[in-house]
Length: 96
Length: 470
Image (cartoon, each protein chain N blue to C red):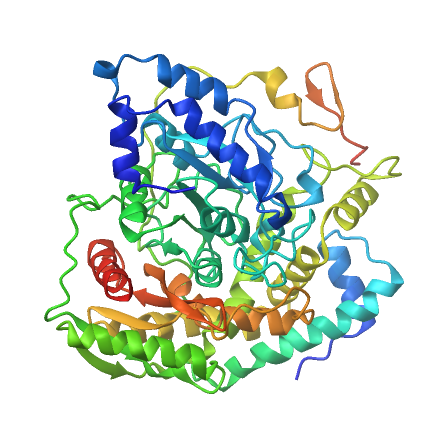
């Protein structure tokens, strides 16, 4: 049975880039434990010869025509939603 | 407010029998009157203007299968005349620069969007209680939930606020609220309606569909929205015959009851109502049998591994950088991400992202994610076997009657609401919920499902059931 402790939750928070307060960590731990406990029942199924499915359409490699088209986008319009922008660019905190 | 069938409504509008702007006024008045049900998040500021433009067109020039027909859209569809919030604080300020294909196609046939409806944030939920902007109430009883995640759309139609509404169904989010609110809700074959411009939840199971007062209405809306879209690489062609002029004849139709959908987890009052309807179907000429799909009992577990995994990927884009809520005065890039997401997302979104991150992480991927994908294959095969001996599978849509607001605070108990609907999403099959009456003053829905691309058969049988229970 999966055991999800505070360290696991903190690690998941870091991977998912979600800041978690101490109060949240304990609660999330028990919630995740319950959910993972429920899905544990799949372990009883023999899937050794079964191929995984990741999509149900059977479609592969859907291409569009490589054609040139007029740009329908207005840069100003697109930038309206950006929390911070400058000189027509989205402004971000230092990355490196 | 009395609503004609949509085909009649559109015809009358084309013939100039009423002013479209009067119809839009009526909808907005209904919305205001029923504000305490909180089905609507925002009304469209341009609906009147659009209605007036349609009214100006000379009758002889009027075209469009949905001319002047008002509709409501779940707030996870991008629309340019309103905000698009996905029911979440993290997108509260967001205004989309383009529209969903489904909305464009409806508007091209003359339909008028009047409002955006409430939903569980990011479509995560079965009751609309996870909306960051307050829950929607059941249209039959204010103390109960309308179902979710398309609870706003379902309630809006039941409350007469528009001719039809759009929703999304990833694990039952159209069918479940349709059942709880007493309206028709259609989940299509995966890919039949373009997902372009609809906020992604789980990309391998998300579908778009209508919530309506009748099966005929659902079929007409589907007829307009469906078919390939070059913007959606997973979209499939529509049926060459379209989705109108359906046969509602039950004679000789092989209808199978799913044994596992009548188990101990299902309220006996709900089960009995469905069995009564099945008996009337048999009396009308359907060949009724029972089919057992043992793997179906694991569908919910498969769902709650695969869907959170896909959610964790699809919600990675909400990072406080390009759009939406952005935490102020963050000291670094990572702090900006962590605080924007911590403060912008609600509890359920965080929960699902965390579960998804866990099942995809190194050391757990094989045991959870890959395992679930393999069981999904078995589920697909078993449903194919079931459809070798039946045209339609039936059962209840929901395992219980609608529950009271606040009754299911435990996440897992909420997830169990989807136990009968998730299989159709995992296998990509179409399914519909048809209202079949009330128990204790609350609506009950029957779920019918068919193989992929068999919407014509599904809608035909659903229409017949509708006729039988009237």
